[in-house]
Length: 94
Image (cartoon, rainbow, N blue to C red; front, side, top):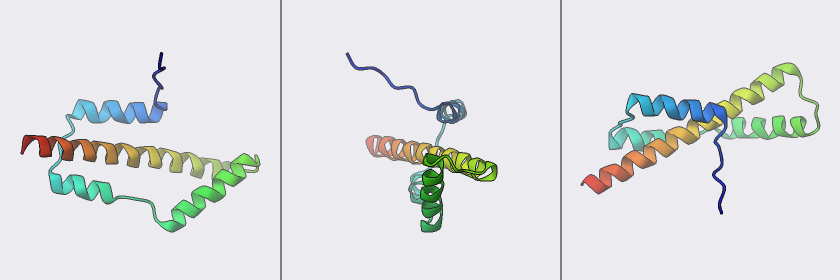
């Protein structure tokens, strides 16, 4: 029997927010949303913060920064997912 995984709470909150809003975007907007991503400097900073977190050496401001990056990554994942679904629906309706 497979066990359903529960998404992290911030992701679930965002999911409910988009669902209540009736998420609808044009195909062009969906393609633009799919292009949103963090740049190389941000990805490097995330790695640096992750290493410090593993070593338990994060200062409080760095923990806040890491938390924000985590939230932002979840938000981008959700936007990308919603954009893919929107494009899929558009293809089926065409």
